[in-house]
Image (cartoon, rainbow, N blue to C red):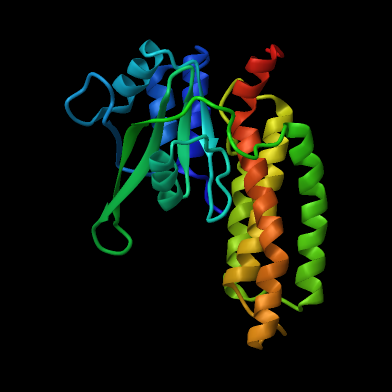
Amino acid sequence: MLSEPRSGRLAAWGNALLAGLVSPDDAVLAIVGEDAVHRVGGLPGESGPVGLTLALGRLRSLGASGLRVALPAPGHPLGLSGPPEFNARALDAEQAVICHGAALGLVPEVYEAGPDGDVHVEVVWHCLSVREAPPADVPSLGEAERELAEALREATEVLSRLDVAASGPVAEAAIDAYRARAEHGREVLAPGYPPRAVRVLELAQRVGLLISVAYERGHGGAVSASEMAARASALRPVERTARRAQVAAYNSVVEERERGVR
């Protein structure tokens, strides 16, 4: 959860493009990020993979008026609506993008090549049919913000109670990198998103940082198998809350449009 999901970038900047707030070139540049190239395969009317600019235009012509994010995990089909075939593929990738207004979804497949330090990353988004139904378990922004505030307190308490060492050179480097990104004013969401969505996403990323440090860094006093299991059990619902909040933030533009807020 330290890194921004590719589905989040695609949905956020795709929504800005569909709303006419950014140019196709700017949207594609933001979506691709540090990857080498993104293509979309399986798009209706195309015989093979096409570039993002053409793909986003085609999705618009097919009726897509917005893009939603799904971040599913085992036992938690967050943001999905079916059918089972699409859900299974999204679960394998741990993310997907669902079109609003068109019964289509996109699941990324990532290809990496090259030596350490010079890895070439290409992404193919597989376009598949989806069921037009409300997405699973996505809270409103207000609900997500309230849940996150409590989750952040719980995460801090759990780390303290289990004596998990969120320190040391590796953990400090992760925290410093997060702070540096924030201080450089990185654009958390694309133009057109409400300030509350930006606030919720930033808080979700902070909670995700704490969870990642707890899972991946030093073990502190939790050295026995039972203590480590207790740590994982305590942090699992916090991680679930942070994922729900991320989806709520990315999907907020579409949700507000459906309610007639925008």
